[in-house]
Length: 583
Image 1 (cartoon, rainbow, N blue to C red):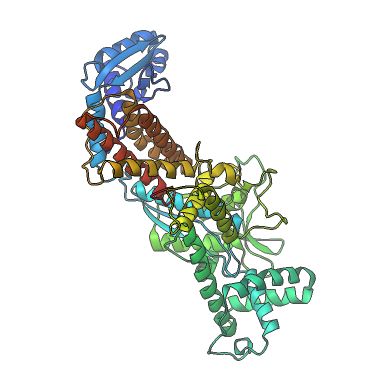
Image 2: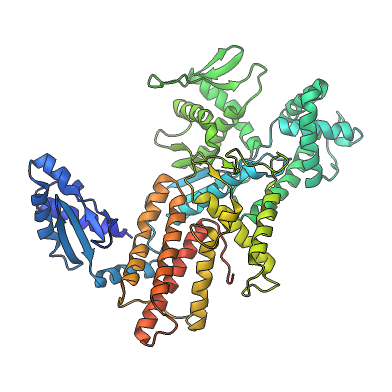
């Protein structure tokens, strides 16, 4: 369904056209002075420039047309030419009823049946998730849910780093420690590989990585192991499969704690079979050429204001790099899913890399010209010193340790609550802690850096996930006390300005979702969820719902807050934040 500003824009655009002006001048937006009006149009100023007339005169002409529409309670012209509009209660109630009955709750739907592949997560196998993986996971998950809620067909891919040197390092170290394993025999063809576990891998990788920095012989062995793995050595493939089995199970467990999941668990290895085809395409199109021993593709444009290096497809030793596998992955995604859009939720510091890859993909026609390839870059999560967040000893915190830290902090915060039973305390603390972290991240535009401050995030006041969860529990309490769980949601009369403000916030939610999906920015969803909660709190403060003796008024109020709860819960679901019944 159309949003309220789209509906009003059509009405006002019709009026501009009827008066002999351009339809495009009829854009309506929300007033920032609700004490004066609810909506506003400033098209008369542009019309005045085009038609050499005073904006006030044009605005009066438009007013005389639209005020005939029974949806408007009041239409006024404010000098020098603002058109101010306020809707009737009946019209607000009518639109609210349509949203209540709409299966999408008034959220605009993409009607083109478009497919989006969204690439986020990007962990390396054989390594534990750490705090650097947090933003990609929660921003990507939120964007996936947002796009699906807006009617897109969305395919999410974790895109594992499973085919590079980190695997070679692990295999080389395992072989040094266990030379008698049959899988390390040159003539290994088939057989069992000893079982590994996540703790072993979490210890082996950093050990091997550090070792390679001081031991040239071991470093060369790791490079050779990587080469032989990618060349299909049976024993190494067998070990690699065991590493994948253990790593993916561990990754899924940790991602599930954040309520993050993926449709595809593809990795760089899945793109390997497309690399020869990629090289052939680039060769046939005469894009590939030799430069300092490497094979590269030029992607610089005449409009570039800074130097743009070529994309390296094959290094001088004939090995592939990230750009190679990213381009091969684009071939795979286009062939498997024919997406209209491919989004990459990656650290914004990778901008140059993705600019090169996208230009090369379009130049080589790996995807249709109108396929949207976009980097949705994010900033860093910083400590109080403004630098990327570290542990007290200066290390990078594991994601599991972060979750434990915020859960413990939330548990301490909830310890004195009489509404949280002992058996539910741990689960509620976990949800509150994770909600605090997610909302504290997502309330910022994804491209911005922000300060990680768990005390601020856990506050029951202000724009926090904790405040939103608390708001839901307050509404839950009201509905329980009035025995209204099964009440049909229906509003047929307004009694106070607080109700009007709450209904307007509900009606404007569709516009918020439209902005959020257009800009691929979940912070709009966070802001709107907070606004709904704050306006509800004002409404609740101004009206004594539980003590109201007018049954019709009470029924309307309960219906309104029940739908407000439903809408806030929709916002939380898109943010992948689980609600709690009590706090």
